[in-house]
Structures are given as structure tokens and as C-alpha cells.
Image (cartoon, rainbow over all chains, first blue to last red; front, top):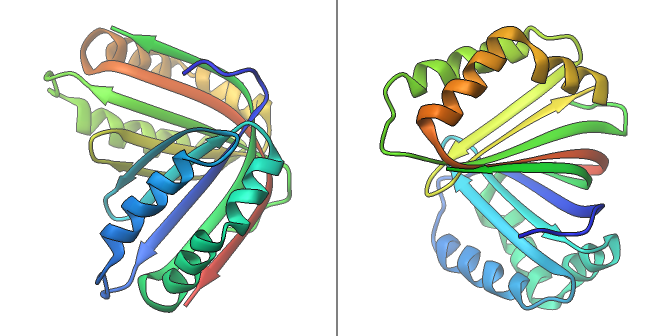
Length: 102
Length: 102
């Protein structure tokens, strides 16, 4: 993707509890739901010791709307109750970017 | 960590080639070297289909210095030649953050 700068990134870093019942399904659902939101630009995700999901958005407003989405709020509450032992959210402005393709 | 805002993040997203000889060792070395650089604040890393490494820095200047570090330049060149089929680098200003601990 090639987006007009600045656009915005949400870096979501997390550690899971032992309780993973329903987590993978909910993570997939939330990723699909994010993709349908206004201002959505992309998402990248990987988990080893730590999980990192970075989602990209056109504006701070689109991030605020996504955070307040009803189904997403439900997932956030369930995440706090059951799945996450720790997480950190960072809201960023992407100021420069470059890429390489072989 | 709790840092004064804004601080800066480098989101490095990558896909590897089949050639992984020396990659893990170099990745470890570069992580350790980053930690010794002025302005370094932290690093988070995970790889599944895609690899995501986010490093955090006090200033844009500390990011520029790290990019230009001689040993890091060597690793970047080796990465382009052998290890990466694709990567993308995004330089970001972290404007807001919050966290949760169970």
C-alpha cells in the first residue's frame, strides 16, 4: 500500500494469559471488522513471546471511531477480563516510510 | 517503560527469503547493538507469516544515527542481498499511549 503521509498507526502490543478460549476466533473477527471500518488502511500482526498488531488508519478520527465500535468494545472488555495479562497501545503519526522488494 | 511524549517508533515489517543462514544471529546482534545506542528506549519483535520489529527512540536524530551506524549498515546491506524478499520501514511519532496490566 502507498498512502498519503501522514497517516496513523495503532501499535498494540500484548501478552496473553493461560486462558485462550475463544481468543483466536475473536482476533480474526476483529481483524475482519477493522477492515470494514471507514479510514482503515491495513493491518499487520505477529505473535511469539509478545504479540504485535499494527493497524493503519487515515486519521485520528477513524482510530477513535474504531475504538468506540460496539463489537470492538465488547472484544476489548472480554480481552481485559480473560485474555490479556498486559497490553500497551500506542497511537502514532507515520511521518516517513520506505520499502524494499526483491 | 513510561516515556515523555512524543517519542518515536520505527516499525520494521519484513518477509524473509528461503535463505536464513546467519539471519537469527545477526538479528540478535543488531538488537543488542540498538540497545547501546544513544536515545534508545525499547524494542519489541515477533515473527509469524510476517516479521514485525518496533524500536522506540527519544528523537528523530537518534533514529538517523542508528540507521547510519556502520555495523547496522553492514547488516542492512546483507539483509537486502540475502535475507529479505520484502520490507517496509515506517518512522512514526508516538502521540498517545495507554496500557493495561492484570
